[in-house]
Image (cartoon, rainbow, N blue to C red; front, side, top):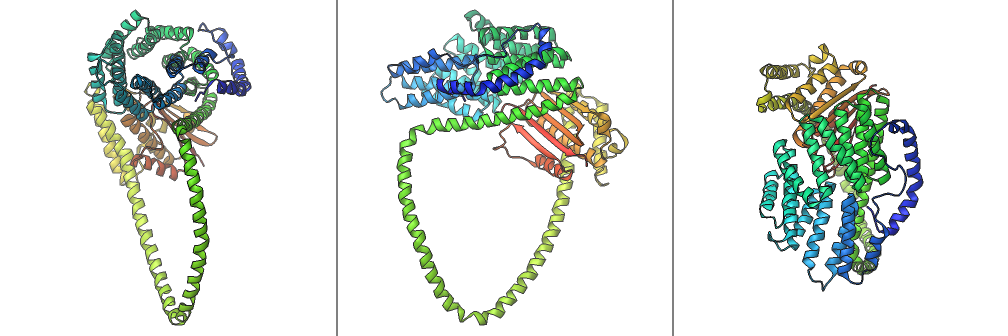
Length: 629
């Protein structure tokens, strides 16, 4: 999280040398590639353009009253909103909210609190912290006048509708936004509602309705001079054009957003657009342009310290190298991706610590009082700790005198009790071993039913629900395949198709069936196919069922538009990388079900390891490593 001016200067001095070394090495590597590029130029070194100038801090420090300080601080927040510095928006928003709350005699206090609550909530939403965003939008509504004549009330209500939608309450969220559009007190808020409604229809794949709402918003933004909002609309329109297979026009629109964002200083939007362009080129198999644009974004993301954009750029480059057969560099970038994910996790932990510091800075005096009280309590406890053992020793000595006379009489009874206890213990061990055997067998059968037959039935269900793509021959084939798997379950659960067909063909056929029946873009990369086909039969079965389970879970829960699967043999081990760009999840809060437990059991059998990188609204990466020996 970014802090005040002095902190920026310290961080800048500490990190300059390291950034120059990393950027220098990468820049030398890609010099020839960029020399022929016609894309917008950029600075590989220099001052971070997302850091505010000293005048903003000077206005805050020289403010003579709180209202002036509030305006100056909110100017700083708006600067970070323009640049896309989410952590700084949240930090300064919390600080300003706390200071405003502590001001006793302040006119329009509730209006000030509603305004800054909305800024904090928008930052939380952009960062994917939906529960926190919901809390702050509700605070903004509570501080507002609670009627549609109040701009802040409507603005917070629009944000509330978006959060409701992305948290799964889709109809409720959509209704809130439509209500705000109908009752908006001004045209700006009305068209902000159209913008969010466009996003909802895009995620529902209702592209014509999405375009209609986006174009309504764009027409207003252009007429009123809201350049950044216009560019954000154009970026979404380019994605719609790409989905409609109008790739040429999509690229033209996207490049305009790319160049305009850079020239106007909207650096986060510029980098996001670069990643979208890279994805367009990758899908069109134009690997040279994909490398150029993604490398540009990668270098800028390092310079500006934007880890999420860096992660997307690395993932795009890794896919480019994999598609062009450069699996050595693809694997190296996989390692880089794990490093960036680790840095994101550390950054989020630091943010949580900073937010706690802001939240509890007003309680320092109470903590000191509590500390003094604790010292007195500890002195009393120490005295009791010394006194109680002395009393205990006296009591134990008395008990010893009382029991010594009974020791001889009870010795024989104690010996008999020990023998009886040992016999019972042996009996319990035998029963426990028998139950464990039964439970293991039940788990094995349940896992096979869930992963193999359940996965096929899910595919059949998907095909039956999609009448437009329903193929009777393919459906019969799927049902027949499920029947054979049930039959094979009674023969040691060893599917016949793994004995008669190449493993890579079986996986490819399964992925093709899923792609034909779903709206998600699913890619499969296997290298080298000859080595993958040579692995042991039992390992093939387990890997196939692991892929089935991962793909089924992603289609059910992830709400992803892109799913990438990579399977390779490298350094005498099988590498399986599974990634989606869906809603992700919080690893500390999620409750794993039977499917996840089955994955762990299968990996235990084949001595595999699984690493999960998942964050809310940032998708999920699952990295599985299985030794071949």
